[in-house]
Amino acid sequence: MTKIIGLTGGIGSGKTTVANYFKSYGIPVYIADDEARKIMQSADIMEAIKDLFGADVFENETLNREKLAKIVFNNPESLEKLNGIVHPAVKKHFEQWLLQNLEAPYVIYEAAILFESGRYKDCDIIITVTAPIESRIQRVIKRDNTTRELVLKRINAQWTDEKRISKSDFVIENIAIEPTKLEIDRILKILKIKQKQA
Image (cartoon, rainbow, N blue to C red; front, side):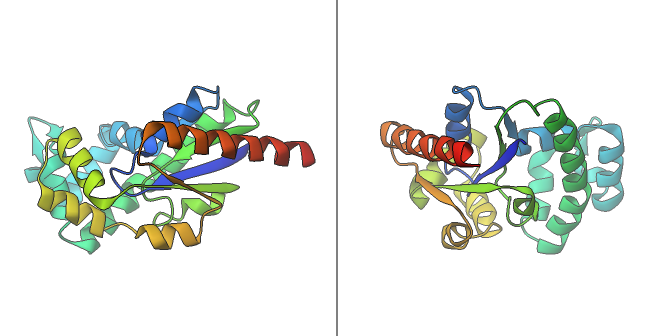
């Protein structure tokens, strides 16, 4: 039976880099944040967002993610409402994706809010990726062309590394690419041994 490896970490920790390295070994990878972005463009989800947050978060019928982020990361209740729309749709999409990957011994489910969303309960193994806070901030500012203040709000809306680590089977400290790859290789060896024992 296919095992689900939950891969998580705070914003800017390098989860996607780690996920891509797993992918290079032929392990199917589902990036929940990317799929959520696509799902948020679907007509029914956009309608639900409009009903909750008003037409102001749209420009020319396109969702303005920055405006929406300013609302939800300043108001935990609004974030919870948005997650209530998006998370069930992502869960359903993942379940359909998983059916297409049942021949794989493992799949990776990569999500920033794996614990906060409750999706960790569906995972057999959990890996947390960490990185120094300043590195994370700089990565996100560069990647998303955003402000330090907004990045910190997003970090503060997520679980701390300590809390994630306490519920994880493995931790990858993503400071430099080579040590990170070595750590992933070590985890893969352990998983293969476990697979043979099962």
